[in-house]
Length: 139
Image (cartoon, rainbow, N blue to C red):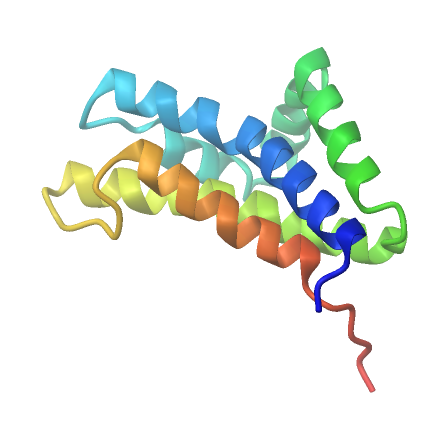
């Protein structure tokens, strides 16, 4: 049976993750295809010097800080190293799933979801799953 606390955490996480995933998806939908922004961001984040600049610039946004703080409050019992690991996973999924969709659209290929909105909805569900997954150790 799922506890009430876990349900509240899941709802709060879904709202927070939607706050991270939906705006970029809406922006990319509004621009139309082809776009290069998501693929550019994915490439920039792999370069150590460029990554530092992009992270610093992103974290200077008060609204982004509020969303991230809210996410952390949803899972107060998560150890800092697990929180960092899952935050990295969530960030990578947001970056690379958007880049993959953008690439497929630019090439006229199929995508798993019909719209950017639907893609963001699927991404939110998957990322909430990452955050709520049981914590396991390496042994």
